[in-house]
Figure 1 (cartoon, rainbow, N blue to C red):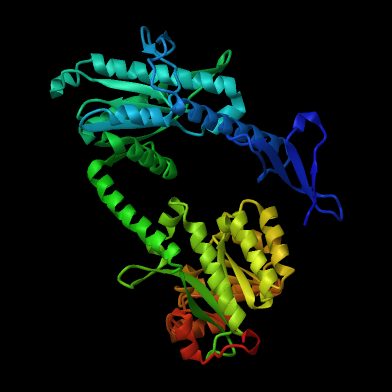
Figure 2: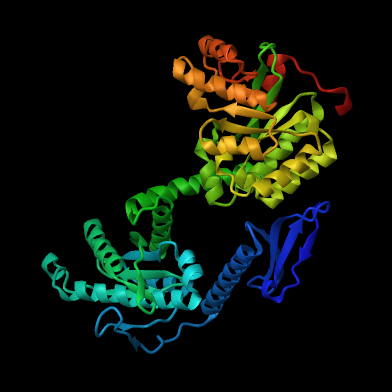
Length: 521
């Protein structure tokens, strides 16, 4: 293990360095802080230097303070509003209370409203960057100014008579300031989807045209993301939150979540959640295995790739496309992967075979998964028959963490592979920075291998890998023609339905005639 030492400079209080014992090179940073319950926490952060680590620590402490404030406010009994303050930064005569509301308090108010509730959540784009660039005090001032700006824009809509012409006697709304940079607009009119689009468009225009002063003589313009919903009061805020998350994920300025789609999605989500829980509780996570064949031995696999599957109540086997993203959304993915690791190691412990286990960059950053895998390796001693394939390798951001993990794996004899080689420049960069044993050639290129240009590109990739001492694997071998073409450019290993379709381990035993190893008895 690499030692950790605390930086003595008072300016960097709470920052520790991770360094290599042999030469003292700093390879990473840890931060120490107290969580919202006052418990001390030491956590590794992605930072290139101690100044960046300090900024990360400040962000973490700010988030902890927000959580503490929200928790304290949600515990308070409901009281009257704070006195309304006058603020004319964005419009004369606009009355705005700058009280910060908790989500819990906001939900109670909306839930108490009878009928359908219309909710819009407004969130400043890249607010963390604004806080770092201009400071926390200035960022808070900008949020207060945004609140006034939005209230002023809504006031103009209220007074221009537009809604009265559509049959609404009054435009009735409440505007709350939630934590950090988020505002909640609660509309008490039964507005249509089209009218909500109109309101969101007007708010975007008001915000984008407004100049926020950051220093004397200098100003900036900001953008906001808006998530909106129209549903029963008890769930409308939750659906607005989901709409906002989707808008931010897709870099959209506005997304509306209607009650119909929300209810259909809720039904689907509940079913998926139940499916995930059942598979976890009944330990039904099932590895399927697909053979990987050497160029000179196409009758029996040299190793197997393990692939996660779940089973529904009807006994149907489900591929990751049906559950993987939802499992991450519900924070159940780690439990699925822990079962997957256990069951793959059970096969390695009882049979003299080699297996590939897929881990994403997110998995590698998950301490529980990472340490569980290393513990099983230490216990079982099967590292020389295991290959860890790093999925989504083009998304690697912290090479130091990945290299540290690879170093610990290789001490146990584990081989390392990366997927979809050739899909981007970052894959070539990974060849130079990671200690790789195998690369899997990009499947979209393999599927077009009959095309001369694609074959030339693949051939050059294979040659580069061989020059670096790295073996290659071609997936998506769908027929004899693709296989022959891949052989012609010197690929080392082949995988695909033409050679072997994924099977449960008991079926693999029958297909290829494996018997339990003597050391397993």
